[in-house]
Image 1 (cartoon, rainbow, N blue to C red):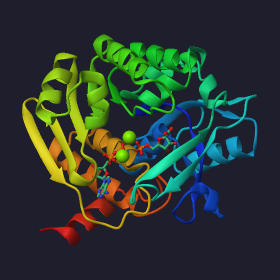
Image 2 (image 1 turned 90 degrees about the horizontal axis):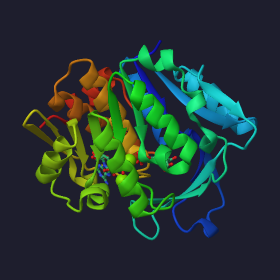
Image 3 (image 1 turned 30 degrees about the vertical axis):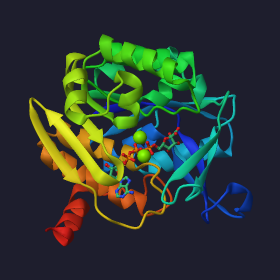
Image 4 (image 1 turned 60 degrees about the vertical axis):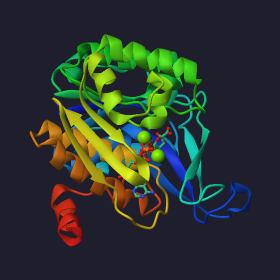
Length: 311
Ligand code: ADP
Ligand code: CKP
Ligand code: MG
Ligand code: MG
């Protein structure tokens, strides 16, 4: 029994050791990542328990993902070993846009994409407080999408990060599928941003987005604004926090660290202001390094950060 169950594809990340076009990069640094796995690590750092329902390949990378996840405290009992290969991706950093990264996937047909409703254990879901997933899991295969639907159907409450990846599906398909999920299930916390909201609702304004998402059954909205910060809404209350100015090594994973931190603190009864402030700290630390989850802080370490930078 865990507090939070996430469904998604853990991946092996090869992060460029130096910035620039991949053809000029000679060294890559390996990290363990994947949006839902990053989310789980943030949940655990914030003192809740978390498990991931996933498949990895019967290969060294699959074993690496399981061992790393277990070492971080994730419940790995619902990670299945599949005969396909473990998905990987490369990160190109700082080119052609400084301080931004591009993800190059080698994951089509991967073990992770074979995730299916049969992997979703009813009692595991029913005994948890919240189920989390993202648009990435909806995009990787129909069976993975059906697994999310089964888990959402059984869930006591749900959080969802839109995370639309244009390399994995078309904007039209993303819109149809994600709006279908939002219409069907009440979402306790929706994590999204202006780019995804433009695709889903044709708008970007945060207040307008909150009104529309609320009509769709969203209770709390976490609306990320990249280098500008983020805004959170609940019950007509709005909280805005500016981002911190820090050197950006690789922004990949910032949103997941923020989402996992925010959701787990909110679930522990913290206010949206507190949860947002800590979410911002987590994302700030993550962007200063390569790797998506190593820097995600505990609330105690986030408080040390906040104490140092208080204005
Ligand atoms: P995602 O990683 O899901 O695309 P964002 O890019 O919006 O999400 O980033 C999430 C959070 O990370 C932001 O709300 C902000 O706090 C922080 N962040 C992202 N990019 C920067 C940046 N360039 N400078 C400072 N903070 C940033
Ligand atoms: O939106 P974020 O930058 O927080 O997400 C990053 C993750 O799962 C990263 O780990 C990558 O593997 C992915 O998103 C993805 O499939 O794009
Ligand atoms: Mg981003
Ligand atoms: Mg994201």
